[in-house]
Amino acid sequence: MKYITVMQKALLTLVCCLLVSGSLLAQRLVSDAKIVYRIETPAQADPSFEGGTLTQYMKGHLSRVDIDFKMVHYSYLINSKDESVVTLIDNHGDKYLIRAGKEEYAKELKEYAQVQFKDATDTKQIAGYTCKKAIGKMADGQTFEVYYTTDLVPENKQYNRRFINLKGLPLQFEIINKNGSRMNVVATKVDLYAIPGSYFDAPKTGYKEISREELLKMGS
View 1 (cartoon, one colour):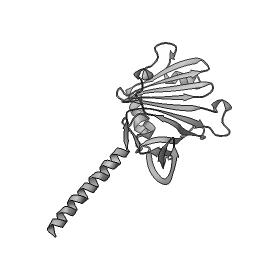
View 2: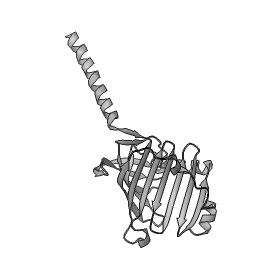
View 3: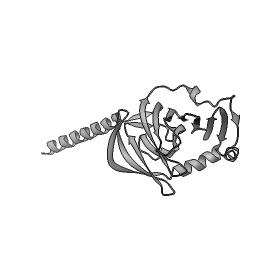
View 4: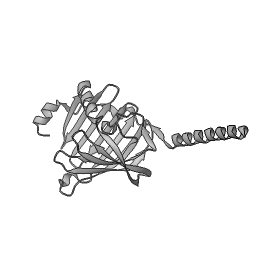
């Protein structure tokens, strides 16, 4: 009887190890990726914002977000190691560059770190991945929906600071605009390959460098 008990314990340990390793194999730690999302704007939105796309790039501690509409293009170059963000704006051919240093980076990171996610029961398939629904709650009490996959886990949690507390990679989420309207962002393609480092370099020419205060005075 004692022999059987020892064998049972050994088998139980083996089964547990296999289950854990199987779970780890199902998840992929992502360092480099390109994710293309379509942007669904509300019916009352300006027609010039229809058909927009959001493209997320990741490479180690570097990330980039490109938001393209018909007339306006935004890029955000985020370096979590240097704790800096460079914003590029191309508005009807007028190009501006805004830099944010460590102090501003830390302030925004602290704000985003307060966003908490609570899982719901809904699931759906997005871009070939099974995604769970979660409700994100911001510090001001506003909530937004997100669908994320646990099959892909970003190596750099700060690639998109809005999702620093999310347990996977978001493939659908809401963006709340300043006027209270919402845009839905849905992934259409996920590519996992080595992204060139040049994608994350700030341009040296072609953009006028201004401060965020100057941009606000311009009414942007």
